[in-house]
Image (cartoon, rainbow, N blue to C red; front, side):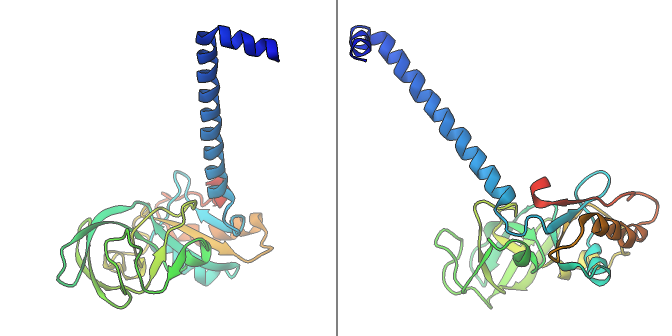
Length: 237
């Protein structure tokens, strides 16, 4: 060991190169370890990960606005059914007469908190880094995004994001149940707007449940543009 240290002291350029190589190697190990940890946390951090299923079609992971009611009515194994909009929208929110503030907007049913326990409801106050501070619950809120022009709404709750979650990061969650665009449409006349998630009862057989999903879901779509409804648990997404 002493002879190696003497060698390093006499060959400073070699020592510097070796030190830089060691530092870079350690940095890569830290980056890879952090990436693996984050991916594992996202996929396996939810205690219901093997009981929450996403239902898709033969081409992609999305269904329509109307599937939720059908699954709730005809699938007793489903403890909670939730729609999440397929895209996050850049919009604006306004409290009272204050200036509009940009916000990321997602549509999701209230059951989202049953499926993702890491999402935490707060007691009527925004975090300091949010657009608004103080008591927000019960206040009127104007929301503008896409073609929706100033939706008049009310703040029902304030939630805290989870850093390691499959739930998209968002600042405003709207209840899709009150989306007039779909209420007035012919049922099952469009597809692709929402991902539909279901939390099933503990002990539910996956294969049998997958068959029942297709039995109750496929007949609603005419024209054959939905040919299959595969299900995937959270780690598989």
